[in-house]
Image 1 (tube, helix red, strand yellow):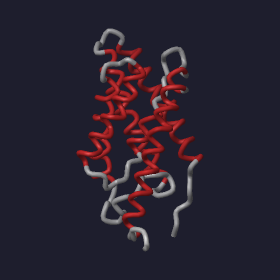
Image 2 (tube, one colour):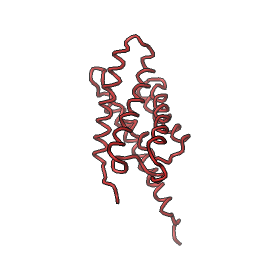
Image 3 (cartoon, rainbow, N blue to C red):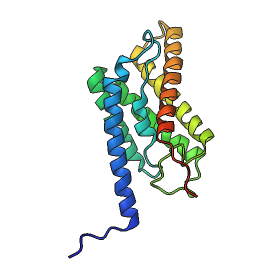
Image 4 (tube, one colour):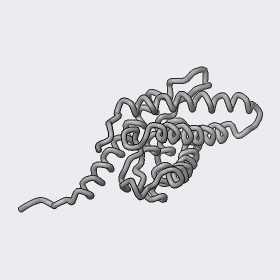
Length: 183
C-alpha cells in the first residue's frame, strides 16, 4: 500500500507551516534569552521577534494573521511581564502589514504562500516593508508602555534608536538566510 499522495500545493503549504513554526520558536527564544538582555542604556532595545509576523505568507487570511500576531505578542509579554503591551503592538503590526501588502504588492503575480523574504521580493520593497512596519510596531509599543507625554523626547529617541537597531538585526537575519530568486 502506498502512503497518502500529497499534491505539490499541499506539500508546499506543509513546508511553509513547518518553516513558520520553527521560525516562531527560534525568534521567541532569541528574543527572550538574548535580545531581552541587550540594550543601549534603555534607549535602544531590539525586538526582532516581529520578523515572524513580517514573514508570514502573503496569502494568510487576515483573521489568522491577527490571531498569530496576538499569540506571538502574548508569548513575549509572558516573559517580559508587560501585561499585553507586546500583544497589542503586534496586533497593530498585523493590521499595518495587511494594509501595506494590500497597497504595495500586486498579489495576483505572487502565489498565496509566498513569504516576503529578501530573495523573493526586491530589496528596496523589502527594506521599506521592514522599516515602516518596525517603526509602526515600536511607536505603538513604546507609546503604550509610556502612556504619557511627560518625557516625549525621550520616548521618540527610544522609538527611533530601537527601530534602527531592530531593522539592522532583521536585515542581518535576512542576509544570513538570503537565497537568490529562482527564475
